[in-house]
Image (cartoon, rainbow, N blue to C red):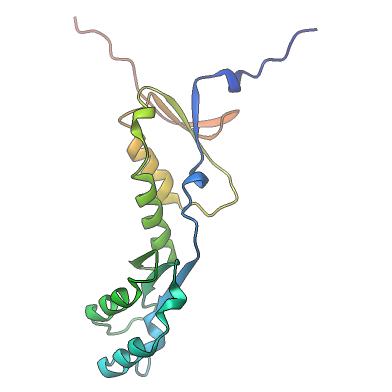
Length: 173
């Protein structure tokens, strides 16, 4: 009987699972719409009173997105004021929705990839998983690796979709 050989495990493929880069921590959205007068405008005195009385420590070690989900008049300083109030507590604060927050968090994490491990490698970016990895993370890791690697594939090592492959340069005549 012929021995079964797992060619995938013996190949020189490098697998990247973006779930390994998932920043651990609770995500929270602060929506300024809760502080609007008649749902239209932000009044400085009322807003400053809210900021003064809010328990900002409840955001300790959380990732916070600040937004206004309605079409309203919100001055830039209001978002800045929220950011300064969150600074001593939150792990990170961004302007935007929770999807924007995920993009920022993954971009920060992926920017720390040790690129020395990848020159001329064949890389598989793992697909399905259990954690919410944003599409932007797949784009970012592809952007980072494209100049370095020989090829990029998406999926599982046993079933991949080719994304990029460097062509061998032929010597000049």
